[in-house]
Length: 350
Image (cartoon, rainbow, N blue to C red; front, side, top):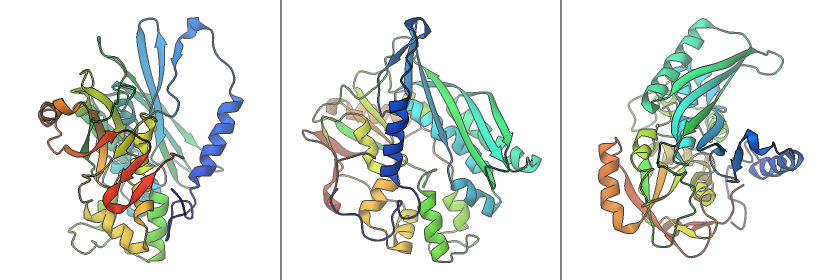
């Protein structure tokens, strides 16, 4: 967009997206090694949700992610199961965004000192996530590194595969007139918490009390774990009318631009975001521009489908556990992502 957003921003809270993008470009420029073909063939998908490698006749998807600074809120609230579930959700949803079925996950825990009660709670959350995703825990790494971290850092790496007859869903078949179908999120998931924590701190908010209109403590509402979309997406990923899949994580609606850079995504039917987003926006006077480029704003996953298959797609999603999927927009000629009702237009993902 043009001018910088007014009010608090993710960058001002300590996360400089443009700086991250420049740094990653330098890292990738420095990694020049390419293994011989007998080690597998990388499927080029720059900027997509998962990396793909073809080994013989099989294609494997790999992705990695962390829970980020949401763990600091978990530590303050003394609640760890939710972020354990986030470890799974953050990764398997990225596999789903290329149409891969999750097969296994390895977790990573960096800590000052291992605490059995905390690890047990994290493990129970991971277990819930694995059950929801139909995914196995293959192992992991727990490192005691007090010189590096002050509390706990959580992350994981997941691998997925493509059932016989299914090709990766990369977004290359997206065309104008396709419909954007959004599946609701369970809240903030695990993104934007550096900004969230800054807003809460500056307003001196008591996390133990509910916000106005809510019935549970604010900490519990903010820690709601990432909704896992793998089973719902798996019901559609093999179908030719499914042209693209997007997990709306950090970067908000701009994540759609990772699918296809030759079309425009018009979000002209975006549903009213849940109250927790309005609460956070009002708390710090955050602009609409910043909200929609930082948070999922109530939609956690988007399917791009052929328009004449919309009704059948919704029926299949409902049977697979996502009866709340709703049309949120369309694809048209052009570029970027727009929300006409808010006057927002994004033309870059950084």
